[in-house]
Image 1 (cartoon, rainbow over the protein chains, first blue to last red):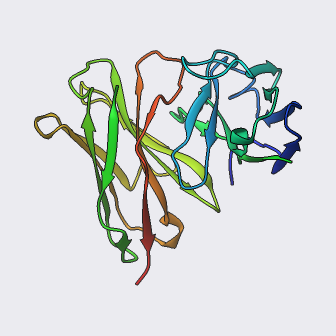
Image 2 (cartoon, each protein chain N blue to C red):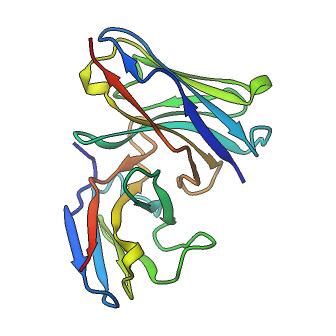
Length: 112
Length: 120
C-alpha cells in the first residue's frame, strides 16, 4: 500500500472547488516542504501540477493551488473544468533509509 | 525539453529478470539531470524504484535495493532498469522519468509508460 493517504474520490460541479488531502508523517510530509502533486488522465503518464507544496510549474493554471499544515498537504482545484477530471497523486520526499520519493494512494476527481 | 520513451519485453517469467530501456532525447548530455524509474500498479500505486546521476551515482528504493540496478549508456542516450527475481507482485506499468538536481524532489519529465506482466 501507498505511504501517503489520500481519499479515494472527490467531486464537484463545474465552476466549484474541490480540495484533496494527503496525509503522511513527520518523516515525510511533515518534515519537508517537498510535496508535489501530479495529475494523471487514463492511460497517460502523470503530469506535475504543484511542487514544493505550493509552487506551480510554467503552464499550469492558477486554478490549482497547494498548501500544507503539519503532516497533511492539500491540493485545491478552483473553478472546476471538465478537463480537470483525472486521478491526482501527492508525493513527498522521505528522509528515511534513502527513500527519496513516496507517493499517495491517489484521488479520483469527478466533475459532475 | 526532455523526451523519454520506454522499451522492453511486456512479459517476463517468474524468477526471471525484468529489463527495460529508456531512450532519451533533448537532455541526456545535461549534467544536472537525474534519470529514474517509477512503477505503478493497482495494488501498490506509484512506487519510486531508483535513480542514476550523470556521475554514475545511484540511489534505490530500500524495498527493492537487493534486486534492482540502474545503469546509463551516454553514447546511446539511454538508461536501463534491471529487476531480478521477479514475481507477480512486480507486474506494473513502468515509467522512466527525469528531474533536475536540487529541484525539490519533483519529477518534471515522464515517459509514456510500458506495461510489464510477470507470468508463466
